[in-house]
Length: 196
Image (tube, rainbow, N blue to C red; front, side, top):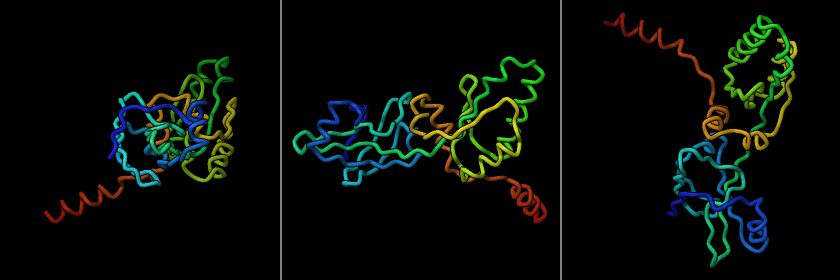
């Protein structure tokens, strides 16, 4: 097993692109929820087992070079196919009266919260990972008819570079998780209480 404590670069760097042309690129395919982790253990498609132990402030990006065997010209590269992100722009509401800003933000928060969608806010932009079908998310936005708000879908890879490791975890780590409710907990409590 190979311990990876730092990234060697990224496949987009000119030097690594040259090495990749003459060598073997071995993908370490990570699920979207694994990318924000600073610690994990996984094997590449070529069978090289890696124990990743990065500083907590770092996270993996698509194309990060994790291991290089110079003798074999073998490069292990992180491959992270991130889902699309719904980008909601709130910049147009900044010139509105405070009460109107509050109403719009409350309605947006209520609409997103009702869907149990994780979100990250940076400045006047809200990022929501594609957690259901794109048509469903678009329909929710249209149904609420949020005034002064625009939204669009953007590839997750474009958004990842704008986020800190903590924001990456918030945005992508929960995107594949199935929302769950604890309504059954009360019933279980009542059942166990009645059995005494």
